[in-house]
Amino acid sequence: MAHTEYKGVDYYNLNDILTEEEKAIRDTVRDFVSNEVIPIIEQYNQEMKFPMQLIPKMAELGLFGPTLPVEYGGMGVNNIAYGLIMQELERGDSGVRSFASVQSALVMYPIFTYGSEEQKKYWLPKLASAEKIGCFGLTEPDFGSNPGGMITKAEKVNGGYLLNGAKMWITNGTIADVAVVWAKLDGKVRGFLVEKGTKGFSAPETKGKLSLRASVTSELVFEDCLIPEANLLPKSGGLKSPLSCLTQARYGIAWGVTGMAMHCYSTVLDYSLSRVQFGKPIAAFQITQEKLAMMLTEITKAQLLNYRLAQMKDNGTMRPQHVSLAKRNNCEIAKTIASMSREMLGANGILDEYPIMRHLNNIESVKTYEGTHEMHTLILGEDVTGIAAFE
Image (cartoon, rainbow, N blue to C red; front, side, top):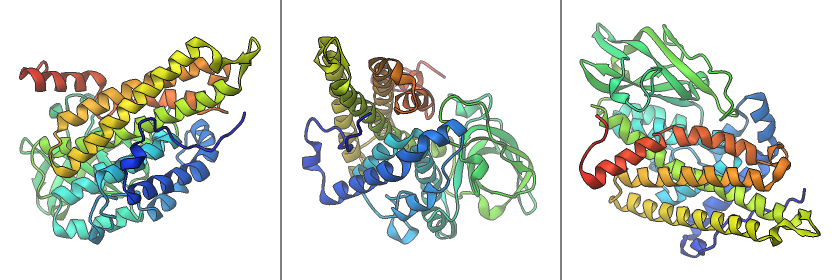
């Protein structure tokens, strides 16, 4: 198999409108993925382990909380740069992008947005440097698409809050030092920082996954956990708080899966030029060219969606529904492109020598988490009609 250096996919010359800083950040992450992630990721995927040795290197590159102010350990970069980081990481693996997404969008963001100054000063630099790893507990065994139905409860007691309940499908749960956990306190959803080692708190790993295998997925169980008063996120209140975090995560996913689609396309393009059947490369056949044209078109559309979404995020005009459109569209086209790429590689498509089957398995999770395709469909439907199809 001939390896050509990965140059990305940029049919509409988006590179021309990126700033020097945005390009430099993208290229740094692209090199990191080429040199550090891709050579090892298949093995970790097979063994169902996360490559922990990547974490310090990712922290060193500033990939955790990069949009946050420098005083809290961030880099203060814009959302285009953040999106490009996610795009490049997901070429490596959805599990690697998920790790960075959770640390940034689901742990650092809620502490930055809903935390006290003390919480921000203590946790954010430690999370940015990966001295501490975080996770986000919203989804429950019986409540996925309907987080408002959550049954995890906090009760005010002497010395803090008593937490009881369980969370499911939590990325990084088993390895996390701190969990941002959402629970009902007097019927209102509030955020709590639950630290590893808290009595009554356990985080067993979820086994048997056929998708996101190079990622740690866990259950979080709380049995009369006493959470200190100082660990309540003071500015959190209502379901809007955790949902605002999901908006951040979905934004990163829209960019990430575009990177996955780009990787599948560039892999299959190289392959089709070198694979000979009936005396010519399969790239010479009309059906192959039609598939490549479709992939290139959908990737270009996704890139333009992402770029505009980033501009709106930076100028404050982005709404959660705008993110739903990009997450929904880009996950769908990444899944189609991964599936089509597998077919175009024929039997070779199922081999771990190529990244396609791993991407195809991963997109099944990524399309589902942070809002299923159906939920984002109904979010958009409600936005344009003013009628909610779900209660």
